[in-house]
Image 1: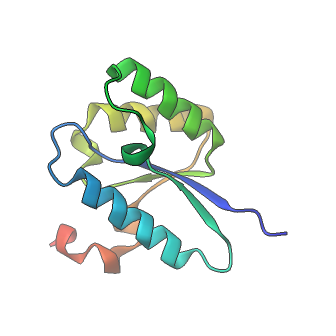
Image 2: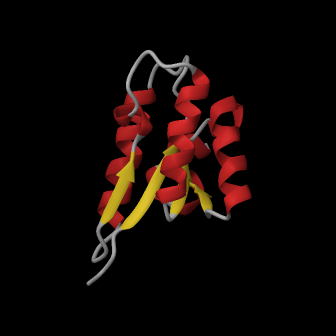
Length: 113
């Protein structure tokens, strides 16, 4: 049995007008390239309930990172306090991370230019 590839998406949400679209794009990319292995994408934009404090969101994110094989960093992660905390936690716990623009440059040509 092939185990699924579990990927946590880390991208800016607060103040990001295209957050939903950015997370959807990353999900579609990961699902399109993960054959024959299934991919399970943890998308905090869709999974996290509205109305929580930033600390509560981070607690949920850390638990999801603990369950993930990798953390995928969406464009703009560098300027997000939450993403930087998620990356620091992933590094601390030994969860590998990668930038979507580096791993899948053909899908992100416009962000690189």
